[in-house]
Image (cartoon, helix red, strand yellow):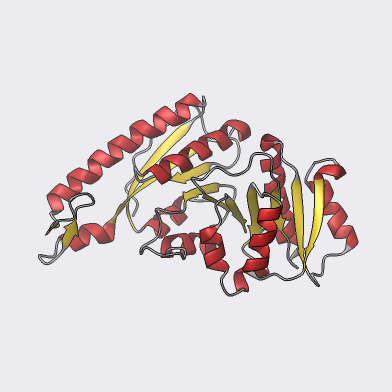
Length: 288
């Protein structure tokens, strides 16, 4: 059962919300800024999500559980009371930060505070019309180049769009790149997401076709129209191969500002796909 605290400014949004995972880190603050900016352009409500990690609190109950200070490097016992107090302070800080950031954009917000496992708590909140914004660096369970289990779980199971946000600033004059696949409806969902991003970023769009992809000329024409952009601002490129190295090279040549792809995309079947998504220094939108 989710134990939630909700705060709001303004009424309920007419459509989907912009959900953003918050934990007090610089990465989540950067994701919050992105979420507030998107909400400003789309009129959506920003819904902050703060999860008190249940497993961590359970671990504190064991006498052998210890934590290492981030600055001191000293090991000390995990104290349940101190951990509870720390989470309460962090939740209050998150509440103030959410109000301040969204307030600067003149938007509406809610904050949900729950206790449990991050993936399950987020999935309990997210709907198919929502956009989930996730600061990628924080949500890995272990350090390393690959995506953490939390990101992987949300990428695979989120019912709506998911935006992996990067702290590093993407090229403002680059293109929004859409990786197409053989699933017609998934292609339309990905291009629709790119069209919304292009509408407020004023960036052109590139459609990537894997070699041998079964996208007909008629379907391609409809996808280009779906972007809502003049034909001169929609480029169609055919990839000689769909391996991550080739894709990364093309993204650099195109000065990609954002990558959009469906979770149905064949790229996810390629070895090294996780490493590519983790290493890309640009926002990645993943659609159903």
